[in-house]
Length: 151
Length: 387
Image (cartoon, rainbow over all chains, first blue to last red; front, top):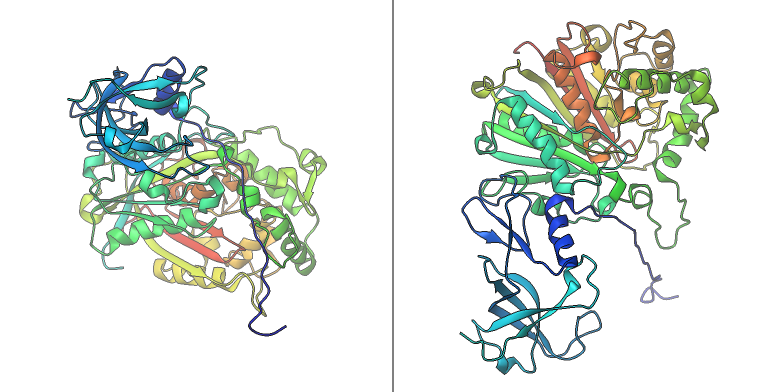
């Protein structure tokens, strides 16, 4: 063997873990199982979705839950023209920041659209749910454009 | 150290097998809030936050300091994460102390944690490597042959480890926060427990715990917020050495001896057994009590086991130098926090705050942590009296 031909070996390392969501994120995920989207009111009055356990400004524990709308507006997006295996769609789609009605900050989810040309900041979108929600963020299959909803 | 610093608050969760009711952030939060309440402070009073945890692979959370800043009120403040394997709880406390001793900050919150029920500490600790045989050993498998070598060198009786296992569980039965409560434990019960890693039996090994420990460390001019007296930091030291090198003495590591000599020099201690009132020492496997008694200079080399067998380290036997009055790592082991629990329990002793496991009149106490292949050491000495 020459010095230019060093030994190599494939090396895969993996472990199993568990996560407890706690009372705040746990409540959000449980709500999804019932097709309900809940945020939490922060110390400055903003409604944050998905909810945070602790206030980003005051560190106070947050527990004032607020149900928000299933529709909202598109704040910004990133078009995925060539989806890969791990993506939620086989056809082109967008990752979007969606500010739901009643919420003060956008949340990230995927947007189903025929073409990037259909997307515009301020476009109205609506949650589309899977048939059997189980308490997971993917219970919302995606957000879809609301016909004639651009504002 | 330029500035004096003291522990003015400690906070711990109850240690349990599983805390499924809280997130990792929620677990830390309990300890942090308890420490702040003990210090008579709120998050706004804190200038910087220092956290520590075991290796990221244990829980699979990379850069946990980013995720945890909201829960610890660290947004807009300096936040630092310390990482020295099992000794991390001790070295995190020392980094937090140095933040104050340097004169940079007046009040620092420091928090360490582990959620073993959601982690994979056993196997993440002994990962397979390419071109090598995988031992699948875990921590006990690593330390078992070192313990056997101690037994050979010292000619200690076979049941020294069994005695330690009983003693620390009787101590733990006094501590409401301890994970294991075994007030009726016997030597026979330990001896009959399953041999896990020969010569370490199940009951001679630490449990797997969920929990967190926090402290507030303050500068000399900021110690009065707490209703309890401060625990003055009289010395702090860390030492490291490689896992393996030719001539390394794994039974009595050089880094541990050097670290102890350094911290004793700072605190003016020449005879730790006589001058200290108690010690919280990292003993995750029973035989590490006699081994560290020697490594830390409480006994001559080869004689540490005699202190254990004579009851010198036992509260219940009226020993002159109780070790691990809280029950120690053998009674609670949230790995990332275990070292800080030793440091915090030493502080509780000299503040007269240790409840049913208080060593009467304790004025000077030692906290100790070790990690990796017994290659990282962190120690401090705290006192009731201002230096």
